[in-house]
Length: 215
Image (tube, rainbow, N blue to C red; front, side):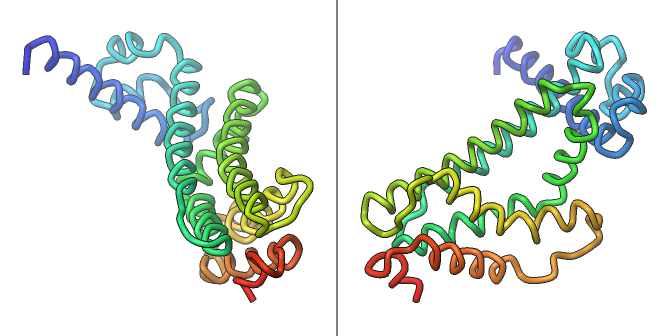
């Protein structure tokens, strides 16, 4: 590897170490209680090096949230290419979304963004909008394909998508968010998703299409 490329690789590793350390500090201590010196110490870099990458703590926070959003976007995209009949596609999306939204790391990031919403209003708004549009967009795309095939019937795909996602979010995300990460999800994710998809198909499934497949 050329010397310049090796230097760039080391620099990128240090930058990532800083982001990882900052994310841990922000999630456990909150924004106000996190010190840049502590982040530098955790990352194994000097304070000067840290400020060379991120001129202020607010810059660091913005990038931590943006990086988390990028990870979440990739996970959302993985659900867009499921093959199979309508019921299979909906179940696959539901389970992927349930696994994502029930991940303690995901909840921790949501808590962090929500806690700092007033201080970083535009960051919080962009974060939530991106997640809603990405996951919701994937599901809306599935629903539109199924409607074009005559498998489901709905006049507002965005409303229908919101209803399915809401049935998944309540037991897998909202309850643990309130009760704490130590509170286990009461039922297996597969059972939660199966019930949500069955309820969804009872409302929107066309009997000769998806509804018949799910019966």
